[in-house]
Image 1 (cartoon, rainbow, N blue to C red):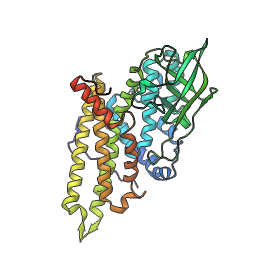
Image 2: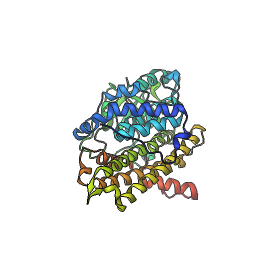
Image 3: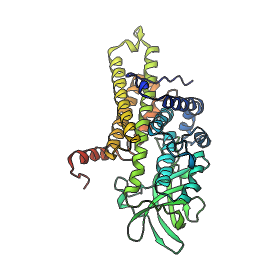
Image 4: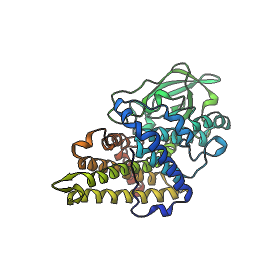
Length: 390
């Protein structure tokens, strides 16, 4: 039974609108109903609960900020953040599915696509009829995406796409992929590649110890013919895919709080029930220290993301501000997961509790969409004006 109760030490609910709380609670109810009862089994089997994709579309988790005319609910960014918080409270891998669909597939089509592309793809992505993936990372280019070698050449009414992307969430099951590649002049552009195009394959990545309930794979392009009407016309250059990552990182900053909340809530409840030396372990100083530090860090992260959400709604959130929140909150969450695991002792490594699964998942979250160290350098560049990347 999922008995989660969210911590709100600074009464942040008072800052949320009634709509925000309704959206958050509805998402939480869905997680308790559809994710919590099955997620440990799927994670143990390293299987993707594909049946949840349609449900996620039904409850509005795909493209929450996409306008209604394109199939989205047209919500604000704080609503999106709260939804990602609740989904990642259930599992980081399920939140990854939402993040990729919303921020890395629907966002670039909405922001940089033609009207025809928006009408063709966004409504089906919003309902979950289509599952999307995002192709930026390559085998030899992760933190340096500008070095990509995936490329396309003009061939009349279409282009010929060659290359490969890896560590791609949703890839094995995706119907469409937003792929970033260089044209013959070396300029980066986005292309919408559709399942069934000859030469397009999506081999699955196996043997993961992290995000085991998330489908990860490669996108391989062997002389794939992509119609020119599938090229995103609105923006090119490296700034285009990086703007998508900003949107995804924003959601991750909120999502990580959900994972931390779940670990804290589990450890708090366990500490009140577990008796050692004649009393609950919650009565021992070292356990109280752990719990007090957890709720402090969660509260700080809540304040950070709420303000970031306000700035995002106003169109004033900078890439560097988003990077700071992503880095801080994921680091916070993984430390809380490790401390919570210790509090549960040997029970903490079993699938009877969610903590070890969160801890393993967060090892991926701290790396993807910009590594922990790269985000540190983004902040360093922002405050000093000096580029330490090269």
